[in-house]
Length: 79
Image (cartoon, rainbow, N blue to C red):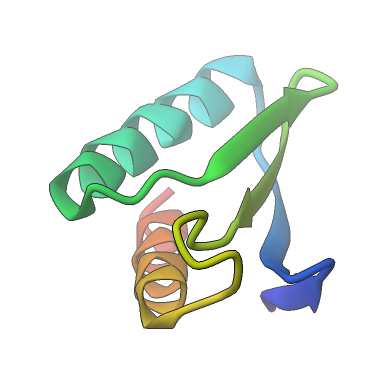
């Protein structure tokens, strides 16, 4: 579940390995580019991602963030 922390939407994801996590970053990048809305993604350990996002132009969470969060969740279901 996405959570609001420090005026950002955040969520952690775990994968079976590094390659799977890296591929997921690529899938997110494609969707984010389409929306022209890019989250911060931290790959740590070898299989964990921490994703955070906010609409930097307005300094808060917007509908665009919630929409991208939903897309990311749908991508994760396909992993």
